[in-house]
Image 1 (cartoon, one colour):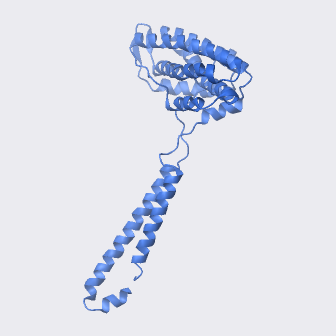
Image 2 (cartoon, one colour):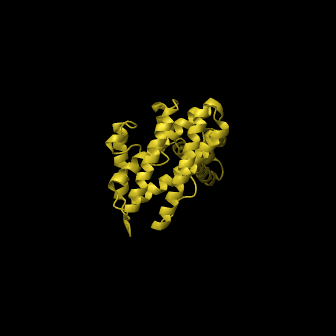
Image 3 (tube, rainbow, N blue to C red):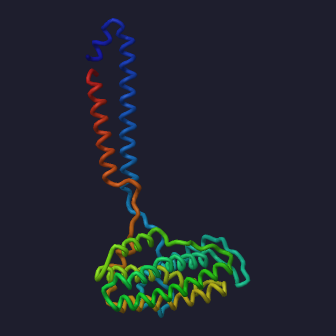
Length: 280
């Protein structure tokens, strides 16, 4: 039935108003459905976000053998950003800055995932050299963890009790590997991770006014540099893999299949609404 025939029929004006209301309702419904689809596409397929700030290099010139100029610059910029956050507190060892606290937090989180996967290498690695290096790293991270926990207690600050989500993902990834694949992934993941914490440790070692933190940072720099050398000595480390390991994107909460299903439902709903409007 067409709209003009409704008006000329008995009681047509009342029926016409009802039809107009129906048309407006249909249009609003279609607009809402289209808006929902657009929101899902924007949120679900958003560009990757970094899991958190990643610094990668020390300022000290004698550490340049491990790191590029760009990595050193990135580390300095990250450290400067942390200092700008403020929140300095006074301790008997000197001022404790946001950068100082971040150093302790990152070292703690590094210990919480790097030690377990290094112990895991004893069962999963295919190379005896990887197993040997893993034992050294596990022992060093145990000692470093005891030091950072004790220092944080002295400074009256809390430390996380688990790795960050990115690090947890690496543990899960390695848990599903064995042999040569484990060796290569383990060496490159750990080398990349050591590079990220290396820079901020070295920066804090040079800049902090807190005596206790400075001593700890020196210990951390020595251990991390030792570990990078050992990991590079496995012959499995490649800079390209380091860049891949650092990418680790986090995307929106909606997967592509979910968006396809919702889009299909919206399409069906629009077809039904269009069929009901066929008189217009």
